[in-house]
Length: 228
Image (cartoon, rainbow, N blue to C red; front, side, top):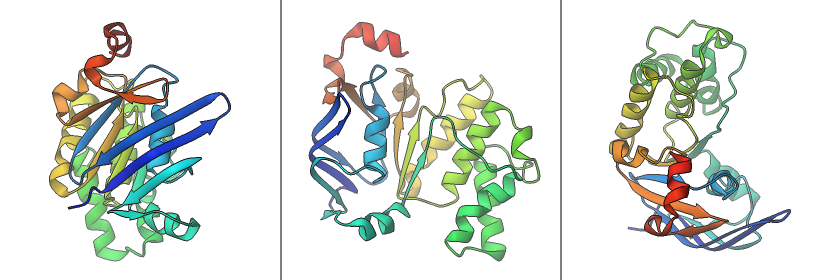
């Protein structure tokens, strides 16, 4: 079976920064954790995987087929969800925030309600449907953002520092939810400064250093400590 997403000889330039990925394969139903110091290219890599950036060179393949053209990128983006480091919620109810993407996909009525209820239960916020976004704590906002991503049931879920700043109550709930997604067929890629997260979640660790993937075992110990 072909990998879900493959990067081949990717080069991406932005100002004085260059991201170079010789080869990266993401397989369906796996968790990948991307570590590295600030400025190493973690967020840039996530945006490339989300098909929001076009590389200067190389090839991106989805299910073994090269991604070519704006229309193809737009179609595939409906199967990929990126949750940014500081997620934005509409100034509306939690339910309305989760319903927005479903309406765009013409998921309405009882099916919409069931999926929203299931997603909020998964993140431990089942009684939050009518809460306003502005009333949520930071940890609750991140959990709602995760539920909003999950409700779309993407093939590929990309998370940029999703647990940064989470309190001790929210963190285990959040990670427990993430750990269930591969069994549902979702591939999860997490950019994180938490070096212990792989121990808790399992999965494959990737390490970026100055725009290039290096074996995690080759990463300087001092950088691992800085990122913990």
